[in-house]
Image 1 (cartoon, rainbow, N blue to C red):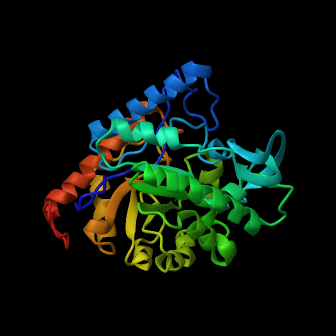
Image 2 (cartoon, protein in one colour; image 1 turned 120 degrees about the horizontal axis):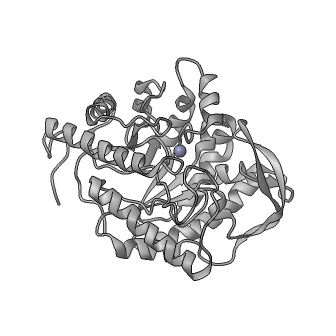
Length: 354
Ligand code: ZN
């Protein structure tokens, strides 16, 4: 299924909280509480619930809420060969916080498709357009210790080749949008220019579906909140990255706008691209009002045409309480509906249906 042209279609960055019977709530890398076949069935049930929450709220382009993986990066990497999970090493992630990570001890390869079954299940469970998220190559490199390649670029290219195989399978299974999560793009600007965008392009090569990249200021965890305090009154990290992405073949860019100090005029640097505008702050327990969401959308509309603007969340909502995330989904859809009504369903420069 391909998306019908419609303005201000809503979507989410990717993750949603997991049910308490599947994993302890409100923590990253939460362990699974089920095992074996019960775990497999529990994950499928959690995907059904995540879909139901999004559909009930009125989200247009839905995800599996990342219910089948423990973490957006390691949840993929744990399926690869060449990565040793027994002997973890403490590294500094995104120059910000220390985490115990696995080490690369040999060539990285993929034994078998990682998410094909997940995508097949998701496709069968909903009639709406679906988005599937994968970690980006640079962010993968930044979440482990490399004792083999000894080159962030070479390792990123090896990951990109694996991600491309994965993405081609997801595309063939009817996924409408494949999104690569690259929060590391907001930190390593020289590397983004030197090889980061090239690795991302290698990951998306030959795909028929839409492709997106998500670049944010992180989950609402303490290390990220502390880091944001150091960034000053204006966050201009996107300024160097967006022109490179605007020239690239990526279709969509997912970014942070709600409650953020990103100067809104930086969106003009993404001319020609679909922009997934973060209108929900994932770092606060406050639920946005629909009117607050609408005002973020209106501000972004000065720089992005409504048929290219997708109201979205700032980042994943996995660390939030479940009820809170559900309320934020409703606010997102309701805020988009306000602006849609203001400009008319076929307003802006949208050309109607085909
Ligand atoms: Zn994010």
